[in-house]
Image 1: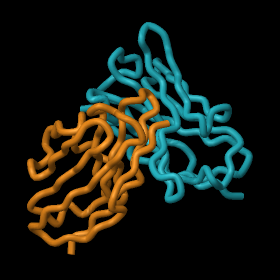
Image 2: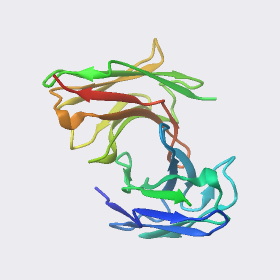
Image 3: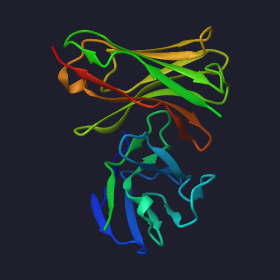
Length: 108
Length: 121
């Protein structure tokens, strides 16, 4: 299975800050990379698909980039409601999609 | 709007079978463009895809190697739902279980509400 490694595992930032989360795949996955946001007590919600395609209704302060093995999720102008755990997920090796271990974002 | 509604017991005894059902509204379990999956989440294993089923003129099922041999996923077209059975459970199978649709992307674009299943005597 393709392994997904995220960093950092947690971070703390202030309202208005810019944060970046990285995700590395154990082999090349082209742009078959999705980002999810999960808040406590809820199921994950897809934010970005195909590495950089913003899902309908997701604020434009969320940006994804990358290809091959290295990807980033950037959140600009951080808002209190962005407090959540973020997961990357590869969709290259269908149907065995695998997730990163998650990055917990705390808003100070 | 697609909605997935999960049901099933929250407590299962060790060595017994875990059974969950996911009822679909707003789509069809026989859709030619979707797949239907079970995913679990635990502190020790994170988000883990367990398996899925889909229809492309015939039914296909795929299972994760970690649970292969213990897992069965079935679709019920008459009720527009799909189910998970996990046999011979141990406390390590304690987790939040989700059903989810594979849609465009591909992504898991719709999820059930989650079912916390505890394996304990």
